[in-house]
Amino acid sequence: MWNNIYNWLDERVGFNDLYANLLDRPEPKTSWWNTLGSASMFLFVLQGLTGIFLTVYYTPSPDHAYDSVQYIMEGVAFGWLIRGIHHWGATLMVLVVFIHMLRVFFTASFKYPRELTWLIGIGLLLTTLGMGFTGYLLPWNQKAFWATTVGTQIAGTVPFIGEFTLKALRGGPDLSALTLQRFFSAHIWMIPGILAALIGVHLFLIMKHGESHWPKKDD
Amino acid sequence: MSGSHELSRRDFIKVTTGIIGGLIGAVVGLPAVYYLIDPALQAGGKEAWIPIGKFEDMQLDKPYSFSFTRVQVNGWERTASSFGGYAVRKSDKPEELLILNSRCTHLACTVNWNEAANGYLCPCHDAKFSKEGEVLDGPPPRPLDVYDEHRITEDGIIEIFFKEG
Image 1 (tube, chains in turn yellow, cyan):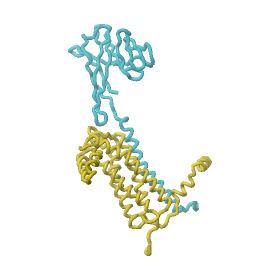
Image 2 (cartoon, one colour):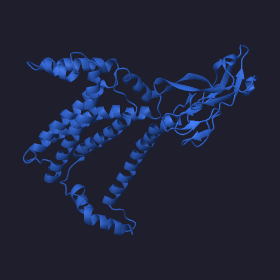
Image 3 (cartoon, chains in turn brown, red):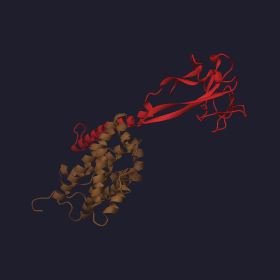
Image 4 (cartoon, chains in turn green, orange):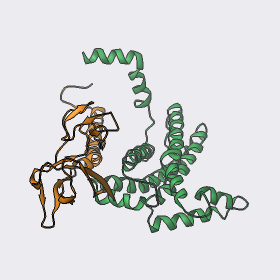
């Protein structure tokens, strides 16, 4: 019976084709270094899930942000685990994405026909850093507050558009409730949305071109 | 794919991936469920004797309104909840006081004594209760709840026994 259900669905959805194209593609002989892209995506999904769970208790307001994070850490069952994974996963994700970029660079995988994949990868690195920058403020503790003060102040040193950029980032001249709220919004909606879309294109291009083979001596 | 007892390399990878993936999923997933439902598992039920008024101020057969607030810590915040009711005096004996909870038994809105209607009216779904709390009209499934334990202090103050839900 399961076979019948599966066949009925497969005729309409095409599981077998999907499987062949997504997971059973022919690959050149590669190494563990080629798994860093998948590792990055796994971390992205993990950060997404733990992040969704954190929003159940986290409150992005100067009055409540710090207390709600303390509550997650000490009051809720396994809150320390969920936040711990999100906290360390963030650091790990930046690291893995960066090493992934180095691998692509050293194996020259960014060359024709994969230049677009590389450029989108740059976008993925920048949005990942953006996630780190916006997420850092959310606990609303001393370190978060001053790191964001410094970070936005650096953006303010850009010639001509610096002052505008600083105010746009902070939602005004100072760090305030507006800053916290817009960093939260950017952290959970805008940047992840861009990130997910870029991952989609990145994956599509990888499937289209396949993986590059490991360079040989005469390459 | 391959023979019955020899596991092929591919199948080994598939099985291993499945097992490790399942383990990771369980290690993160089960605590995550607990994390979500945790507030529902917190024990409440603090008990206290609450003064509601002087016995001598309660007039015969005229509902005496009282209210009080209880502060509870929900999450990281202290939340004040209001409670109230009516004490109906039937005689000179304090133990014969009928003390009603003004929380409607339908869907928990607060009922108010209405002299003209000679009953407690609920603003939400037009419920009506008699002076003694019997259902006269509307959707409530049972009479108003009663604070069934009360005592009188040496100063003549009525106190009710209150247990948080």
